[in-house]
Amino acid sequence: MRTTGKIAALLGTTTALLALTTGSATAGPEHHNTDPLGTGCASGASTIRSGSVGGINYEIRYSAGCGTNWVRVPALSGTVYMVIRSDWGGSAVGGYQTGSGGSHWTPQVYAPGGTCVTFWVQRIGSGDPATGNVRLG
Image (cartoon, rainbow, N blue to C red; front, side, top):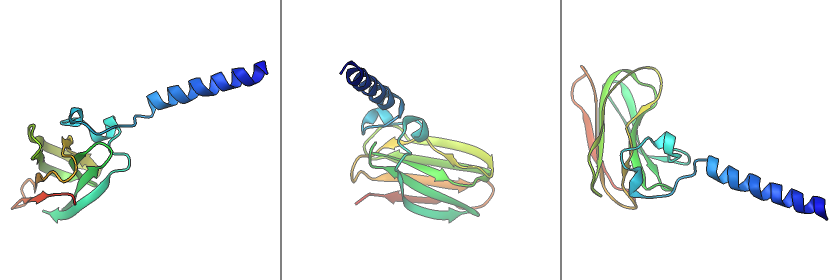
């Protein structure tokens, strides 16, 4: 009986520690202008729009768990300017990023539910930007 109690206590402690370290995220404005990967918001996120501009592919990502959106370029070669803003409020986030094949993304904006987001993606030195508005739902 004592062994069973010790095992139960150990399992309870392990479960509590695991919950603290998994990085699960909940929706809230505190995620505005934060890293989607670092906050756990990228886990389970989906692409709600994709396109190509100046020879690079981009995605508008949405995290239902966090209520956030961000722009991601899965394989950036060169320099791109990418910005996203939410009609919820807060500032537009993003800027210039340079890469040689890896994935790059903007900070995320809080945009719960059907909140509209506006994005701008432009490959530097390659003409016109891709711009648009996205509303989930």
